[in-house]
Length: 197
Image 1: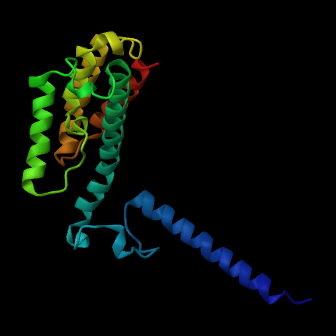
Image 2 (image 1 turned 180 degrees about the vertical axis):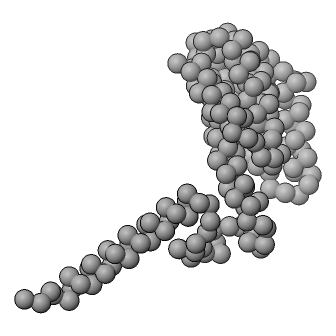
Image 3 (image 1 turned 120 degrees about the horizontal axis):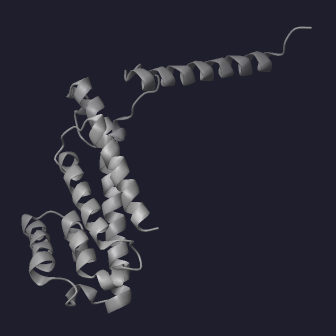
């Protein structure tokens, strides 16, 4: 009895899917673009991105993972700090004595003003979004009485924040890091979250 045509078509389709899956795995393992799936022009906002050399694009893709880690970490710390400060001081916490005028408020205000004066869209109306990683750490350690229940050690917060700030530099300034520094970053992020347990 001959096979039904729809069974042959289904088998052909499944074979094609398996080939595409295998080729994607080869692309991932080798770092080479085999053009298995077409890349749409909307995947990237940077015009002419394909004109950069392949090795530079591959390095950028590898480093983007570490930018994502810092983006998430820094913004989660901002959210944590803001929540605890609101709980302690109310909605106007930013204007309270808990936020040092010279070390934190004025620099953040200056960064906001610089964006407004440049004519670019300000990133936020909330000045905590203009604080640096170091300033966030300063907010925590300066107000240890309200952060003590959240973190296990003030000195550890300061030490790990300093280490993260050092590791952040090459990533924020578009320099590649080697595997050892990537391991240090992973360990420092794990240490940060362990402080909160």
